[in-house]
Structures are given as structure tokens and as C-alpha cells.
Image 1 (tube, rainbow, N blue to C red):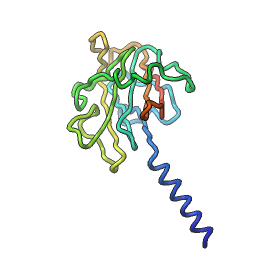
Image 2: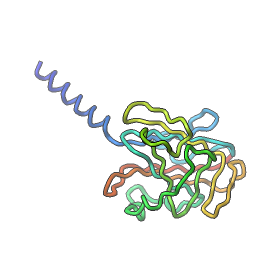
Image 3: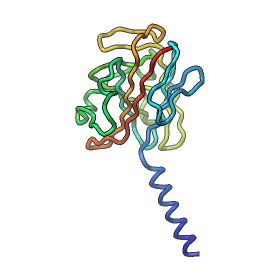
Image 4: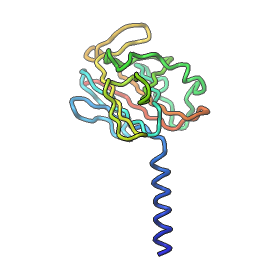
Length: 186
């Protein structure tokens, strides 16, 4: 009986620690099909609108570097992110509720996609799914790209690969998770 109770307590403690660990899940979806699964770094999409779905578990948000060059994308997993200590100052302002259905593209700056149920705005499409008090699923529909030189490029007109570098951090700042995705076009 003691062994059973001890085993139960250890299992419960492990579950509690894992359930509270910060985590961001990233999916790329087009026409109802999920193209990005954990561990996959390169995908091909049609030149038409797609969506990026972000699951935030015990996180306020996720940083994203979206670019048509591979500057940050080519970092090896053990290489530090340049200027990590100033990343919060490099977050670009985006439209509330993704009104323009666009992805900001920049070689220098980052996007910060967040959700706080107490705030009256966020960067995802209007309806964020609340799973529980610590887990939210936001979707960002992409119909066009807005570049740092103030040009708008429709998805159907894009010619370059798209490099996405997702990053979550803790205070310090300390990197928690990174996920890289290269999108090429059919």
C-alpha cells in the first residue's frame, strides 16, 4: 500500500510540474490541412492564404521573426539568439485582432503574439480559444505580408521562401523554446 501511495504522489508531482511548464505549440494550416508538426522544419504551401495557430500554455506570448532572408533562421540550436536582452524593445506594433490578415516581415525586428483575457486586444484573429485558465489557442490568418519598407505583398505574389523563427523567453531574459519553419511555395 505504501508503494502504491508513493507511486501515486510521484506521478501526481510529475504531472503537476509538466502541466505547469511553459510551452508554445505552433501549427501551419492551409485549406484545413496541418502542414507543420512538431520536429518538422520545412514545408511547402500553395500560394494562397494560410494560418498560423499558436497554443500558449503557461505563457503570455511568443516572439516571431518573420523574414524572406534566413539570418536568424540559420542559427544552430545551441547558438544564442543575437540581442536577446533587447528583444522586448524590438517588438513591432501590429493591428489588433489581425484586421489586415497580414504577417509583418522584418530583418531587424520581431513580432510578439500574446493573449491576456484581461486585455481588450491581442494580435491573433478575433476569436481566441480558451482551453483553460492557463492555455489559449490563437490563430493568425495570413493573406498578405507587410514588409519593413512598407510594401504589401499578397501571398499569391510571393516569390521568396518565408523563414519563421518562433521564440519564447522567461525573465532574465532566458530562452525557453525555439521553433524554426521554412516555407517554400508550390
